[in-house]
Length: 337
Image 1: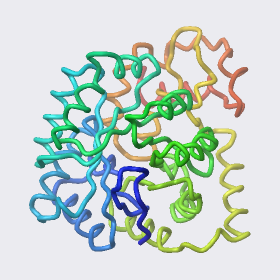
Image 2: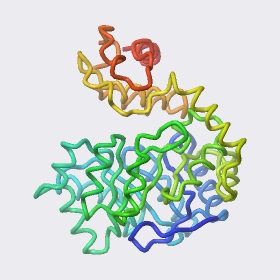
Image 3: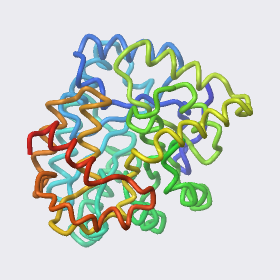
């Protein structure tokens, strides 16, 4: 296992981390067994979130039962915007994770407007800075899906880590990743397998971990089989071969005309559909098997895919020429609206 320093935090972490989204589809004993196996293999970084339903609770209970809390760098996140809400969310995370401190607490996918609220007086950053001063929070980070938010976070000195999607097919953050190290911030790679769209998990992780700009990658895991594949990829530190590079291009060719990279260039939708979000939640059904979780989040969208009037304006702006109107019809078939 490779270990690196997490930006300027001083924390030493395994380059292969444990992504806590998919454990929602197993159970707490299964989570405990998986974390034990990950620990035995040298993984010492765990990522979860308030939004991942039972994930914090099952991870917290498992670490307590195993007596391994101090062996892991524990990271979680929430969507609080105000100091008051952040204090409440942080308290819930501490309770569910059964710990007196959280090593990395992150703002979970804010918009640019949300980030302004977080950074303003009385915003969520105020509460995290106070918690950091008290030793309850070790470090502060941010997760994003939009490059504009990523770029803004690079300018915020209090933000020590940035998480963003990066993989064989999602390259919209590539230039910004290189700027993380210069800014003293760690880059945490989410969705190294593109949310499961890339079937060859070993190849996907080999590609991501070959990039020195990636501090730690956090593929989601729910089975020991997935853990073994990820470990095999992380253990192979040789440069990508010509055959592997060719295989990466084949993946791009296969997904390039049908895969939403959430660049958001399709916006604004004529009727207000949040197109990347609709595709994201649909992917959680198709790739993660998290149907109930995906349905709950899809239900929060103010305008559903069925509202599409097929004007086609979004398709003229999509840099990947996706058949967005047809893809939205697929979303309607899966969610019923």
